[in-house]
Length: 468
Ligand SMILES: Cc1ncc(COP(=O)(O)O)c(C=O)c1O
Image 1 (cartoon, rainbow, N blue to C red):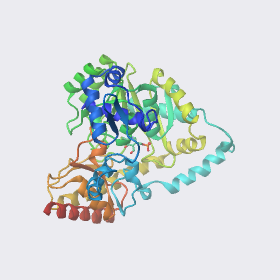
Image 2: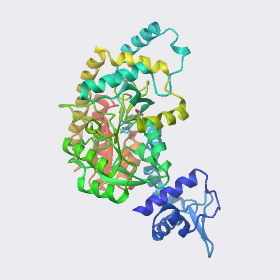
Image 3: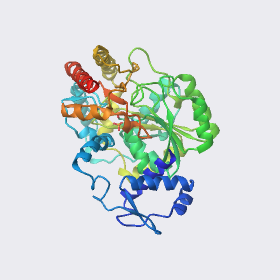
Image 4: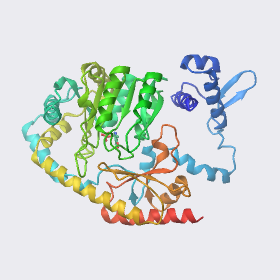
């Protein structure tokens, strides 16, 4: 599938305006040389661009960029456009799906605001302004408030016995910004990186925008195939492996402890940075998840992203990046360029709330509420007379559902949107743009009553499609 990545790479450069309408694209030979790939790979990518109406051929001259509006869809009949509309929607990004207004929003992996400590937080807002009367008049440092970084490094010590100096912590605007900054410092066009298959789709969009060559690593309920990971590291020498090993988005799977330890060894051996995105660690149901793999790293190959946006306050957008100086140094520079640091006010509110007893009580209640919602979703899915399958998530916010072969995800998506139900099509979580038989359903945003009704309606739609 390398040609698919070359295709994405060319599309990204077109979107950036490097090649505009009617510009000549580089010759197959030149591009193959530039990207370090085989000529046949570039040829196949050009063929696909032509087929998709993105490029045209001038005889004996080469490939040229198609002007907008003259793509393949432009010269097809309406009827054909109707037929392709679902495919177009299925390719859209996560944020596009979130724009769709729906009564039953199973597409958003965010926690129902009614389950968050809004009232308590507003008390802390007042408290913080009493403690720091000049708070609104001061910038934070780009790296983040020192008090907060000290608290977080103590937190790491207390929970995992990992010693990290506050200078090895960076505060970012959510994990999303951390992923973006890491992509900026690590990726040059066509660099290989490993990503899970499936994975968090917004991360894929970020990596593609930097021109990365995405090498997929399948993630199953048993974890990764470690021999395969080693082979990929050996063969492609990836810059990093981006992973979300605990209550993974979208699948809910968790990587076993043994594989965590093995990965750290492989990272050292093949000099591959491990980016561990751990946004859901505290959202476990029966038992605590395994330790972050970052805690097994002694040589500095792992970077740990712990976002607190989801379960503390999405409004504060606080994420901590833990890593050694070799990574944190360049990251601080990138963060300075991006925004010169998170607002001080949100960091101070967070640090006071984070250390409070109420925070612990909130977490305990939240776990129970989320488990109840997961159970309801599972009950309703099981009650439907459809042969869909899933693995029970032991934490996190999502169920990764395999549809029966008789139900097409694109048809289900179109019909569900018409009936005000949204979900995430598996295809956008797949670095290879496949996985058409999978969908992600989030149980964390809609309330219990809506969950029952929404899943029943979704099942009715699926059943009708099945009968056609
Ligand atoms: C795996 C993963 N990483 C990062 C993010 C973004 O997190 P934040 O809201 O902290 O930017 C999400 C949000 O859904 C996620 O699921």
